Each structure stands twice: as structure tokens, then as C-alpha cells.
Image: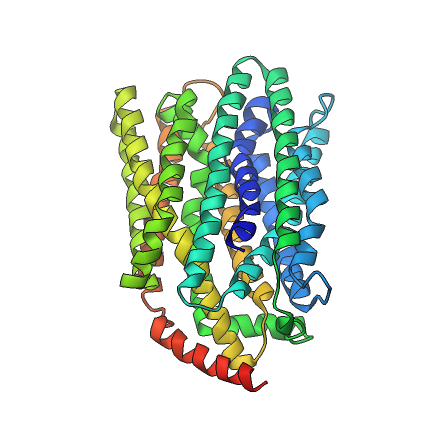
Length: 447
């Protein structure tokens, strides 16, 4: 069960890393689209998420099917995900100007929309597969490890893409298309495997209010969920620019674009390998304390990278950013394991209050907040690059470098510290959750 649940996250991690880290650079440096225009496209995709995420979450809660209310959506996502992902990296060579911008807008907005068909039901299913306080951490920890493993696999592709860029835009386009096709096929196979192997609880079907406004009203009225929504937004405001700017930092600040995959690997490997460490530590110290620690470690690790602006030696810059990436990766392994597990506990509190099971509505809300934060920062990042004097493929001014590092390091530092302070108010600990589970188990047993 654990393997089948985590496996498709490999493909999702691969795809999200390629889009999050490379599409902005691919668009500005290969397709020659203005950064501000790409910022607007990413922001538009997040505006549409205001409709698509809640809609998919609520509809998956209400779905009745022999495949289950989650697996039906997961299986239905296969073809749209493959098609739109290839579309992002394969604009026709003859397109240019407004036609090329329109193609990329449809491709990017389309991809993030159809990924919702998989992502929200998949996360929701994870909360259903186990009601144990700590078993959830194990389940979501394995999912995080698979997701990060997919991201690691994508790093080899970064080397190929960066090498292809050095041979010109035609080679870069060809490499991007080939790699996107392989990724689409593998991801499709993993999603189908999970959809056919996983099982769902039949007693959860039909246990949701028929009024969608009531369902999302319950999410907002849940004090634990409301706090997590705020913290998630702040946390991801700080983290969104990191992904899109990593390649820019490697090329224009560190001066070693060919080492970008290695820098990212310094982040990804600790994030994956540390998962088995965080699971027992969460039992010993508690999920909340560990999550606060991960936020502070993340903020500190990226905040320290602002020192790059004062360094002159390229080798020193490379060693320093790689070391900070290791610490940030350790923190990511903790946050990726603990955060969705805590969210699952909050959904149990909702069942305790309402008698309903609406994981889809909850994870749709969190997923929308996550995407909204990314949209805000990607919009800001595009305009900051544009107005700081950024020019592709040349040495950048100090103003442009400081602008990049401010978004890449100081913004995460501020946001993660604020998030850590706010999450200290979260009161649904192991003891409180145990009391809720005892009532729910007794209630469901009588039913």
C-alpha cells in the first residue's frame, strides 16, 4: 500500500521540478519571452486555481464509483497531464510573438489545472488510508521521499537541458521535447499503477454535505484549518521564488550554471534520505515542535545565502551555497513529512464536529493557498527581474544580483520565521487527537 501510494509522486516531483525551476528560464532565454509576461502567465494560472482546486476537491468528496471517490479522479488525470506537460516544452518552431505567448499560457495554465485532478484526490486519499496519528507521518513521509526522488531524477535532465542551451535554441527545444515525452509516459504508468492497486474505504463515500459553500464554510470555521491556511500561505510566499530563481542564482550570482544540478542535488538528497530520521523524531518530540524546527532551519539556511553578494571567489560561492542547500534539504525532509500528516489530523477534527469526511475540500483549500502564494511570488519575481535591469545571457548589474538574492534568501527568512511563530498557536497535539479518535472510533463502531 505504501509503495503504491508513493510511486506516482515520483512523476509529479519530476514534472513540478522541471516546470518550477526551468520553464521561466526556458521561456526567457530560449523562447525569448519577457520575464514580466511569464510572471503574468503563472499568476493567471493561480487565479484559475481559485475555481479548479475547490471544484475538484468538492466533487471528489461527492464522487460515487466502483473505483472509489479518489481513484476515479486519479485515473482520469493520466492523459491530460501527459498532453499538457509535453505542450509546455514543445511550442511549434514557427510560433513567435503573441502566438507563442498564447501557446505557453494555455500550456502552463492547462498543466497546473489538470495536475489538480491528480494532486488533490491523491493527497486526500493519503489522509484516508490511515487514521493513526504517527502512521500518517510515515505514509506522507514515504510520499515526500518518492516526490523528492522524482525531483532528483530531473536533475540529470537539467544537465542535458543546460548543455543543449549552449548549442543554441534549436538544440534546447529538441532536448526539452524528448525529455518531456519520456516523463509523460513514465508518469502515466505510475499513476495507472497506483490507481489500480490502492483501495479506498467504502464507508467514507457519500459523507459530505451537498452544499459546496457549506463544505468550504466548514473548512474556514475549523480553527485548526484556518491557522494552517494562514501559515501555509506565508510559508509558500517565502519559498516560491526559490524554485524559479535557483538557475538564475547559479548562473548570474554564483557564476557556475553548469553546477546548478549539483547545487539542487545537495538539497534533494538530504530531503529524501532524512525522512526515516524525522518519523521517529516526531514520535519523540511531537509533530509540532519538529515542524517549527524545520521552518526555522529553512529560513536560516536560505537567509544565509544573501552573503553570496559579498563574495568574490567563485569556488567559495559554490561551496557555500551547496552547504546551505544541504541544511535546507534536511529541513524540507522534515516539513514534507510532518505538514500533510498534521493536515490529516485536522480533517479528523472536522469529522468530529460535522460527522462528514471531506478530505478533498480540505486539501483543495491548502493546495489553492499553496498555489496562490506561488502565483503572487512568481508575478513579483517576473517584475523584479524586469525592472532591476535583468538582461538574459549577459553579466548582471549589482542591482539585479541584489534583487535576485533578496527574493531568494531574505524573503524566505522573513516568511519562515513568521510562520514558525504563528504555528506555535496550533493546539491539536497528539493527546487532543487521541481523544478525538477515541470518540470517532466509538461513534463509527456503533454505526
